[in-house]
Image (cartoon, rainbow, N blue to C red; front, side, top):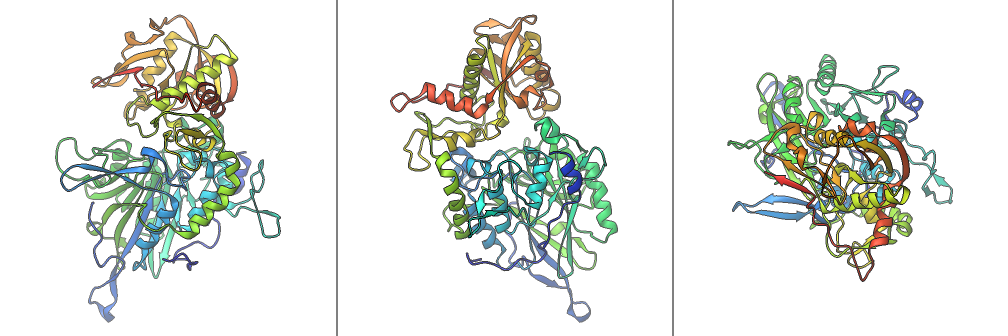
Length: 610
């Protein structure tokens, strides 16, 4: 497709869809290439030569997180397995390239639908996050996204704000960000694709807060989409953001609505689920179905996929930011396609669903799928460049302000290890802020999911290499969490550290980043809570005293028991400080200069035994 305005594709909705907007407001809140026939009708030789089957192209992605501009550092790379077995890093992502990739992929595919599996917004870089993600919704509209599920980050600013993302309207506090040609405030129009939230209900009414499902239709072909987020969303978002909401079991919810769609005559069904797994390889083109010990995929999605009714023909997943195209058996034992396209728009998945007009169902044995790199070697989509430039003019005065200096890359999100240099730096910054409020502060803990990117030494603009701008710091910490101080006993701290690797976190550990002075050993050869070696936990070289009280700095999310760490929510004598981004920027300003930039911390506070 060219850069000129394109006609709407078949199946696009013309109106906003929100099942329970009123109640929301009251809440306050394979690697196989596609066959040459893909997208074509197939003759069955029946009466009148009517075409019996047609290939429906399903394009999908997940966890975009407002990354309109190409993500920097390791966050903007995918790993590709070469023919000789070696691995190669490829720069990827950016909405200008994602638009080009999707538009190119749709060519010669008259039956094409584009779907996403949540976290399109939230934890976004400044270009989108500063404007409450309105720029990203506008970009998704231009991409011709047809449908998406909600993810946990869609609830970062609460249910009422999510309703605004769907229906439009100016922000209740910050107002309208843009102006029309007459200089008057321009109303945000909202998403022209439906957000689906089948397993999120209003506690008071018991009804879904958004549409639970949506049906794509084109020339007699119908494909139903059911959208759900992970049931554990309350464990990983701010309590205020989900106040008045209830999150239900993914399997039971999908099975319920699959039965409803089936009764309506919709036999072809895709589930968009913001939950995922971990493939055995980090390469995007890894053959997930290859035999061998340790191959395949693990994590929450495996059990969920095995429990979802065979009525569902494919699962588009997300949340883990992993890349995979796998088959997992459904309850009847038949293989079913389960896909995920990494994150930040670095990949998209192209799946062929062969639709049988007689049965109205997908021919499961004909389903093919593959992940494709959103290469930065291709042409940029001019309309997306224009969108970025428009918002960048509004953001630039804030985004380009220098806040500190670094001597080299400081890995964070893409570090790939339990402890990252950037995690250490952020924890140190929060401890410094805490000490400015209370000199008795002892240590700081930072949740790994709150670190959204690396700090990259190479300049992103005209600021110069090694200069950290406000926009880059915002990209690292976009949540505006306050830094809180609480009293916790030594016993509670030990319990909290063990909760990182047990209970809700046993399958997918949430390893806290720790401030200078706190050390311990993580023994990965053991299981559950035993992975944290109790007698190794020390503060400034001394063993923690279970009966002693320690003054602990942690962000508001952790102070509420987030990330499956309820013990941290039991702190006493709370003191609320500034937001975490200010604490980080203040630390950079006080501890770095052009002549003396900050070097990456050694990340040696947690000793790993494998």
